[in-house]
Image (cartoon, rainbow, N blue to C red; front, top):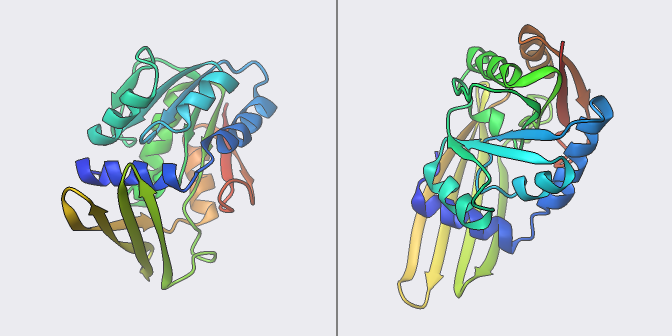
Amino acid sequence: MYGGESAKIYYAQHTARGKDYRAEAEAVAEQIRLRLPGASSVLDVACGTGGHLGPFTELIGYAEGVDLSEPMLEIARRELPAELPLHVGDMRDFDLGRTFDSLTCLFASIGYVGSVDELRASLVRFARHVRPGGVVVVEPWWFPDTFVDRWVSGDIVRWEGDTISRMSHTVREGDTSRMEVHYLRASPDTGVQHLTEVHRAMLFTREQYETAFSLAGLRPEYVPGILSGRGLFVGVRT
């Protein structure tokens, strides 16, 4: 889960790098509308700093967000209209007590669950939050056969007077990936700070995703290639 400093750096990195939340939201909304043309509400699970929620309100209509990290939601509250509901919740057991036309879980956030059982529990929760005929869209993490072991990435951005360098190294450990990330943030006021994070994400197979969808009462379809290249799983509640 992202703490306060991690959330600020996350927001700065993706904003400064120009992550195109609007284009991603358009691609997801298109998949929803193909299956439910009249969809007018969406719940974004693991919404983070809320980058997709603004575009969703324009493309779909009513929107709400759920995230496990309160610091991430604090940033989302600053960036989004005050009337847009944001909830602290764990995708494995949250319960808002109502349903939506559609639900999304993007940016491979589903990979942060810890097992196949937790994947299935999350999909059950997703299904319970859409109406019959509603649409659930999940962006997966890499599959075991598409994951690139020992992957290295890095970039440098400037944001509000600070310079932030990010370097990461990702390796396979059994059925998970382990990404170690190092940040250096140079500020005129505080000098250079070093922050390290470790992210573990499950390498589920396509069949494990599809089974989790089916067991939750969602008719699954895999749409390859879009968004980050990992594709999307799209399920309709039966």
